[in-house]
Length: 91
Image 1 (cartoon, helix red, strand yellow):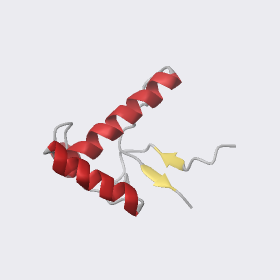
Image 2: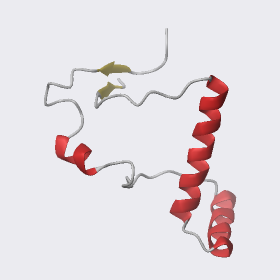
Image 3: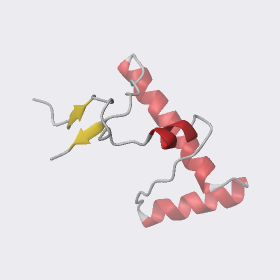
Image 4: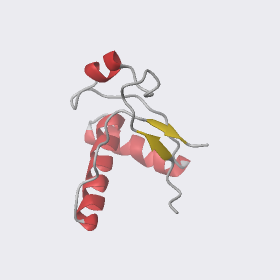
């Protein structure tokens, strides 16, 4: 049995976990804010790289994540499917 949470794909209910207006506003070009934690030494390196490369931390993190996900898909042999709006039951 998988450790992945059960997913309710019933998007016709109001409990789908996402608001339709929110989803309409967020396209591939928009950015979604989220929080994460990094080890302090990695964060300092990231700040230094952003300074010396004259780029934003956001741009550097986005490029790194995009590259890593692409590498994972290449290893897997297929892209990760982006699922329709759903609610994850992680209980």
